[in-house]
Amino acid sequence: MLPESLLYCPPVRGKMKTLYPSHFFLLDCVLFVFTALLPRPARRAFASRYEKRLSESLFPDYNVREQFDILYVDNGTSALVSAFKLIRLAKGERVYLNSNTCTAVGESILASGGEPAFLTTNYEGLTDDSFLPNDVAGRTVVLLTNTYGFLENVRSLKARKPCPLIINDLSQANIVSPEFRAVCEESELIVLSFGPEKYVGGLGGGALLVKKDVPKEIRLELSILSTSLQEFMLSAQLKKIVNRLRYIMTFVTVNTLLYGILKSVGAAYTLHPSKDIEYVLLLRDSIMPRRISLPDIMSITRRIRWYSRRQSEERGKYKLLVRAIEQKNRTIGKESVSPMLILRCTPETRYAVAKSLASKGFQTTWNYTPLFMSKPFRNFSCQSDNKLWQSILQVPYRFLTHAQLVDLGNAINYAFKNN
Image (cartoon, rainbow, N blue to C red; front, side, top):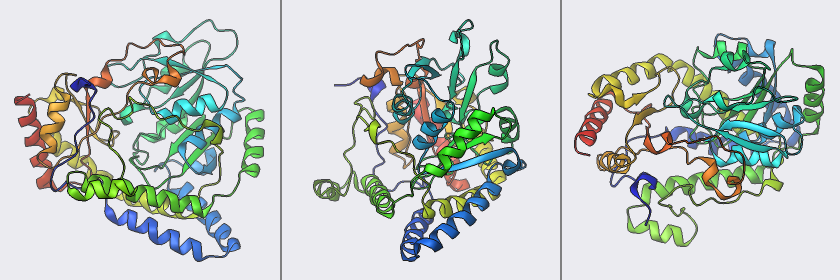
């Protein structure tokens, strides 16, 4: 029996408050059907047009297309693998990164021939770079993952001597925030993911942004890579829709008799109490970057424009929610950056707080189990005593009504008072 500090958040019993707008999943399905009916030349024409539109929508108040070359791929893992190809990551070369990140990030390093070297997360949710080597002969590669959506201090890292080679993975962050102007100006290589649960989340898709003033050999690699990418297959897009539907059905039916029936026929997932403690090995040899699918890029373009219009509303919701929480020291981060409300608990009370919120219809989550705890990564260099992950509880709030936000604040106050 696992201790409660390792248990994943319990699912809601009864009616769950809105986590994500359902109309976007319906849009994904409609776009898939529309794309399947198009002849191949028309698909290519649409893809080219929407890549331009998406590039114009990324990072408000900053002309991305003037400053960056952009490569759109099928998912965030492919974007990371592509980044490592561009910098010609050598076999066995270390990539320093925050230990609090998803397994796909670690797999992308292994698939590229590198070795992850884990750094700890400080109590503000940022990477502690104090263990980065200062006297390495050659280069130091750093992968920033901006865990919990909090922006890493790129300027501070670039001031180190020697200056490390930085890949800035912004997949967890609010990529339509105006604060990203500074991030774009300071970053040479940026990775994005548009997968489920991301701030601008769809069924999939990823992007690699390469600043136009990077060394000539990196731009040459980008040119070679962009012409060699394989086309995305519609069968894979259909599989993503089916998997997402299984995910939705899992949470909708998990506390009903229907769940057992759906699970027995493969229409729902099995929920593991420890989330990703029990690591499921990815087929890293099968990580093969492909072009982004047309349905994904059309859907993501619409999502980004929709979320951009909602920025002031979302900041207002965050402020309203924080005002309703009595213990202000329980929250971490800023409303303009983090896609979720981040609560600081104790390892002993996190599960009880999550259970209390679930009883009132509010689903919670936590990320991530440090990679060095998973089998494939236990033998790699680790300077991490990462304990923050056991204290973090994440609460989706972006699509709640104002009345529900007040209810959530009251539910959080009740949960902390009674646990």
